[in-house]
Length: 300
Image (cartoon, rainbow, N blue to C red; front, side):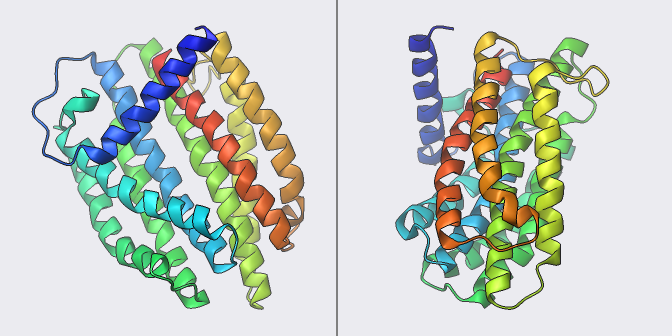
């Protein structure tokens, strides 16, 4: 793919996400489409929900520390719009995305479960957005994050269970799932680094956050290695083309710089406000690369 073609494709994908948010009417039945392509899109959308579950707590944490107020408030607002809208589109379908309604009973059950959990989280997000930056509000939201992540993972698991497709398609879709999980893991690492720093400032125990950031960093780096070359044992396809390989290399370079900023947190120490600010900026660059990797893997 040429640079011009890739830029156009990225623009089209960005517009598609905008349509996801703006198409609020109940869609009509979607046009005929390749089942593997539909499944890849569903896995991408459902996989992004895992990242959003971490992003909403990370943004709330940054807000509680006064870091990038406008940027983080906007991010939290976007999450509160994208998360329920994506659930609706996965359940009902979306003609603008050529996405049919979900008919598999296990997937519908998982989506309804995620919707119920979101119903418990949404008022807590709104409380933060209306100005409640208290430690209690952040703690309350953070305590509901694991349930939202679990529900989101349940949707992905239901989509990928018993794949009735060819072995080659299955390995590609596993790569799509893993690439999508990288978005979640990278945001979870940022979230835990912020929560650890916030907890230490309040004189609270940081053990849980330290263990979480260590485990998620290890998994992120292991998955990055698998995505760069593929893994026959895990049934994960290698990058579909040179553009995907280059995007993986770029993301690794960004991650290498971020990891240096994270080193104190990986040792169980709080990060300074300046370092957290730098991480918040660096993550947005990494997220764009990770989004591109998911899209290119799904389209390859």
